[in-house]
Image (cartoon, rainbow, N blue to C red; front, side, top):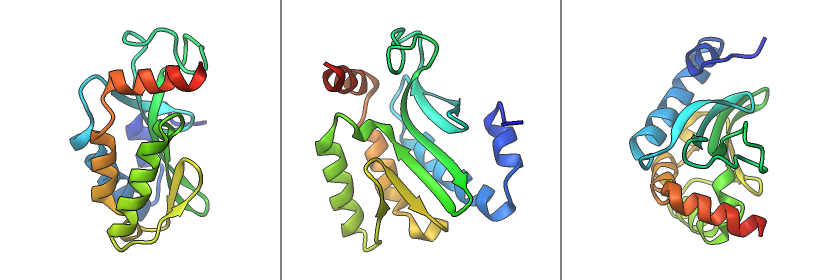
Length: 147
């Protein structure tokens, strides 16, 4: 049965994964602009625009809050899904450039960063990226991408 809370999700992980995800979670929460909420979304820890702020929801589904980023543990490692990169190519480019400047090699897909251990991740770049996306800007970018 999938976890219904962040605490349940983390408790089910091996200690090393739990420690890594807690560190990433702390960085995100410390840099998260006002208005977002944290919870379980798509089977991972997610940060999203609450339906009270954007009732149309994700994919125009009024039951699914608009996601910003998701953090998960997979068989082959851990992953951050930056849903905020879709419709915001300048943010994605900025992230990639900053990541490379950190001296770490990003293992990236179009909107995700995979990492096997916390030291593989440019944690400060993750935090600075999150800080660059206020709720209203995220909603506007999402709407523009869907227009």
